[in-house]
Amino acid sequence: MGSLAGAALLVGHPATAAAHLVTTGMGPVYDGAGHLFLTPEDLVPVLAIALFAGLRGPAAGRRAMFLLPPAWLMGGLIGSVLRVGAPASTPALSFLVLGGLVASDLRAPVAWVSGLAVIVGLVHGFGNGAVLRDGAGTLGLIGIVAMSYVVVTLVAASVVSLRVPWMRIAVRVAGSWIAAVGLLMFGWALR
Amino acid sequence: MSGSRRFLLVLLVLLVLVGTRATVHAHESQPGMLDIEQLAGDRFEVLWRAPIYFGQPHPAHPELPASWTTVAPSTVRELADSQLFRSIVSVGRAGLDGAVIRFPRLESTTTDVFVRLERLDGTSMTTVVRPTKPWAQLRGERSWRASAADYLGLGFHHILQGVDHLLFVLGLLLIVEGRMTLVKTVTAFTVAHSITLGLATLGYARAPLAPLNATIALSILFLGPEIVRRWRGETSVTIRYPWVAAFSFGLLHGFGFASGLSTTGMPRAELPLALLFFNVGVEAGQLVFVFLALALAKAFRVLELRWPRWAELLPGYTVGSLGAYWTIQRTVILLGVLR
Image (cartoon, each protein chain N blue to C red):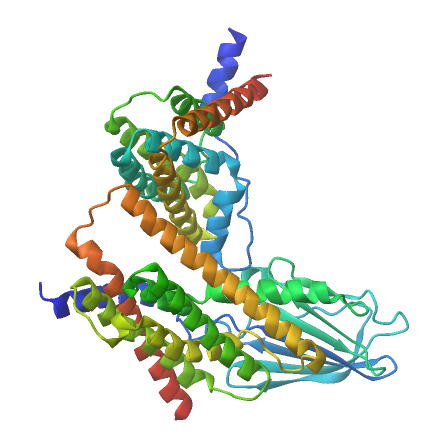
């Protein structure tokens, strides 16, 4: 019962917006792009959705590529207005769900990929927005969004182009690791 | 909608978008320069060249160590592209070695600062201060590797911050067809800008900044119609021999790169090293951009993207519109300079 209450608290509790963007010395757009690469909580879900979309084929890859970045931008703008961090459990939940989907290679319809891309974009963008308001601002957000577009496009296309069966299995193994990290993050938060 | 109307619409949108941001000036990435020269004993002349930043005086200013005392009042000279602060200080008995000079507010800019220390015994030290590490520690001679890494980073930053240079490279990529033509075009651009970068850095040639920036913008505008022509399946000299345009305009862009490598006061002995590694940094940045653009183009093919007509034309119109906007803007600046 206690664990259940702890989990509920974890899921609902907003994260403190204390993080700062990395300073590249090249302006806020590059700071935003650098942020995505240096923040595993944001980068891994982007990679995971790209892997999952790639496993589901070109149509799913296209959906992820066109839906995740605008959703991230929208979430970021909303987050910068409301100034409330995303729930602390967001990264763990994203790791667990998306990693699980990649690992299981679930034969989900393309609409699922679209929905997941929008949800991941909105939630993670929302988390960024609260932080960006005091830092790099909208230009930083544009840097994050542009980099998420590049990552999703390149990774999804790489997975789509895989022809050797064992390489698809390697992608699924990567998904299982992502899910395992998500599980560990949950365990750590509940200890 | 006719082609010219669409062009005007895109141009208008871009003008509004760019115009809402702070006034955009020709070269925001010019480095600053702090020159410390020993006059006698503990007396040093401190020269701080603060580049004009987005049309305003630069927000950063060097903060000298508290133990240093000013012995002659500071003077300020207003130059066309910078402000020059001069003062004479006494560094006291503690000397200069190990002293730290900070640059408050540099971290909120994209400006790199060259720091040069020259002593009466002929020894000198140079270093580059970045917004990511806005301070310099004055020490003895540095290893060539440390200086090389500084210049490499400077070149890499300069190309990636130079939207005009990147847009020109993108324009070239959009008109090039076939691997061999691509290699020839990128090589021609590299060779051409390396030549003028070298000539300008070594002091054999010089291009005034205002007309240079206007001409660089014109080179981008020139590519816009060529991209659209290529998309329509038409041909031209530029489409058949893109390396000719790459080489010709590359010569201009090289002068532009040279503005990122301020050699004012740089020790002569360090010039070849600075030139080599700055150029390597520029090439590395350019290659990263080219590979990224090509990888994205391949990813679009793998994901079987079918672009609508307006989206296929967008890159050409964007390159042309931005080129036109910068040409007009920089010509206005040029005329302002001439008046």
